[in-house]
Length: 396
Ligand SMILES: [Zn+2]
Image (cartoon, rainbow, N blue to C red; front, top):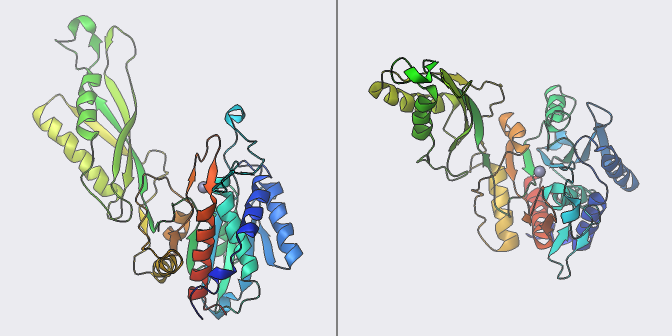
């Protein structure tokens, strides 16, 4: 099959229509039912094999399938249709639920246009493009709710269904979150630490006699920890450490006996909770070595929501296919996405051992007023996906 055959079936107007239809149905997290019903109806009208998979009937997901998982690999495209709510409607030049194309045709405006109804729309649309294809394997869309909140009702629920054998286990997963048409094959992890610095409470009058000021001691620790970390990973960039909360003191005339601060630490591949903790201890022990009054304790992952750094190796067939398809469609070498970005639902697939790549359009003002997506990027995304699906599933 000549390169481009599948990519050439991509129709810009169909993508714009799909994105606009999805944006026009408000779906803040928790209220995804109407937009999911719309997707299910769209599939039913076309005879596309689809299934509602829901932990709560009011927060459904739609799984769309073409091909046969028993005949080869299963390639999943995961996109969410929930959005953040609109809290700034007066700042919008167009209604957030009135999808509007800019006069030059470059941008499509609306809540969810960038994050990420347009991109999810590309995935749903591609299921129709491949509906009649002969695939060596299966193509699925996991159209999910609850990405902007906990994922409990969305991707986490689908992973539970996969683990229970009620959905096929994907071999590959494409995520369509904004990546500016760059290849995102890894995500930083995160872990929190809570440091308690101990002093000795006393009357202010005796601050220099019996008091040990825990705030002053903690200040040394904060300054020792709050810095750029001199490490770099080509897929995600640098790790991050940031001290984001601090609390101490009971009254203006009492030397504080205790000061507690929290550390947000973002991990790159190769780093773990243990290595990050060891670095923190090393910095704090160095203070203690010079200051016998400096005493501390560290609590690791106090709320239990740590996420490991996760990466799909560069030599994965999925990474290779997306890179080859991006080269074929754009004529350029796609860069890796190295940016200060948050996590996506891709981590749930990666942590389950499923090769996962994020490749999505660029956009502006996600979560803010006048959110928009770049229409040209959406078409490129769709063409790259179509070409990669053709390669990975030997589509004919
Ligand atoms: Zn998103």
